[in-house]
Image 1 (cartoon, each protein chain N blue to C red):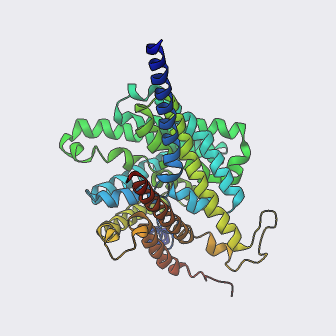
Image 2 (tube, each protein chain N blue to C red; image 1 turned 120 degrees about the vertical axis):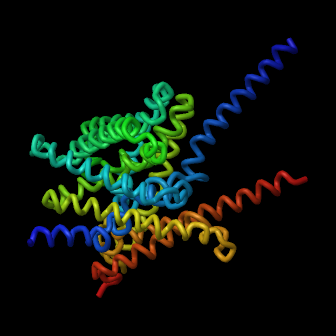
Image 3 (tube, rainbow over the protein chains, first blue to last red; image 1 turned 180 degrees about the vertical axis):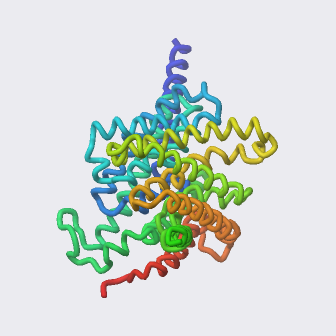
Length: 220
Length: 198
């Protein structure tokens, strides 16, 4: 009786540990170790593609649709492939998945164009599909790829949203409602880089404060 | 003569107003990583240039077969991805067999140099701009040189981005983003754009 209670407790702890690890795999690339703001991946699609809410949302959805299947496939077969073979195979699979996604949701590429295509086969996908996915279990890879796609999407939405607000577009009202900066200037990469710099600094500050609080909590 | 001048001007534009990295934003993730490691930037930029040229020439050949279906971005991406992957694999086999000493030097950087956004974006740009074969080729060479220059500019800056004078929240990548902002803003001056409404 006592033994079974211990075993039940052990199983409960194992389950809790498993879910905590899954949450960490999702939350890391999504927020604290954001795939764009701390790892510096996927910068090009945000600079060249996130010009407003709609394009940023399309980039986010396209990233989820293409990256997750490629990472899952890479998790299943990746370890059987030598290291040097993984990037080209991931690239080839991603291009194929992109084609299928375009057949299913044609509006995604109509909205994002060439930037969306380059994002689907870009550094976010390559890094997670050929580096992380092969050494991890399916659920871990699912959590990681979803976290990376959501982290990328979150940054794209913030940058696209700020750009749209600065040009004076507020959701349904397109154009110069009260904007002061021209669309031509806001579409320049330097504006995106400036916003990424500010966001990255804010995240770094947030992480520092979080670590400080955690340290204080540990101290008696 | 006109064609030669046009090609040379295209190569020059790849450095300044049409700079793919700082005016277009492509390949910045790779630039940040490569400049931080700072190992053999010349070989890295050279490999990027070679693979860009190979992918570009292959795309030009495929273009003649696939027209007009070819103009669809998803078809373009698929063909570029396949040619990129094939050239990478061929490059690995050929270099390891023919020049093993050189291969040992570059095998770690081969995957990221051969498969990246710069290599994939260059054929896209030449198709969108409707450039001639040699104009496109010189744009690839110019972009490779711009990539090398950007690595050389950013590499010595990295240690300074972690110095104590910089606020803690800005140290590292945020400061690198701001540094790149200034470079991109400087290059924007060549295009003659205005920042605010006239």
